[in-house]
Image (cartoon, rainbow, N blue to C red):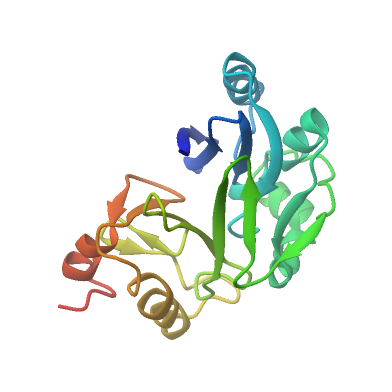
Length: 214
């Protein structure tokens, strides 16, 4: 059974997730740890739980979601994995960081690119990759059917959606991704977003003012 540890990191208040099961293998999704205190916090948790990190994944490559990639990569010998369409942002991270007054080490190159339909395996657990552009090219979600949860990055929020006014953002594309890839999941599926509180597919279908179906 997958356990999920949730952290909120950096000035953008990014939700970082550590997923692990009874084998103690774990994967880290969207490491937003920027300050040393944040890096120490996630490292301490992994150490205290005696976890073995075996995967580093990004839902998309906006700076707030991968600013901790270098730390996780160097600490645990992992290379980040994300969708190839996210390279457009990944390659501009130094410039983007400077615009926010941040200092970012040279980020590790991706070990492999994720594709729609891929299966991520760790321990006895697995996640399915869903390609969901609209907020940004390269956006993916990670779905676990057995425990009915999906990690969605900035695609869908509690009664909101990801911005579409940034480069490669497009409302119609985002709406299509949500309706065809997320709202087709069971209504009881828990939605774990890149920012803010969790929600469910059923709740958003009823109450989301941007993409709700009723």
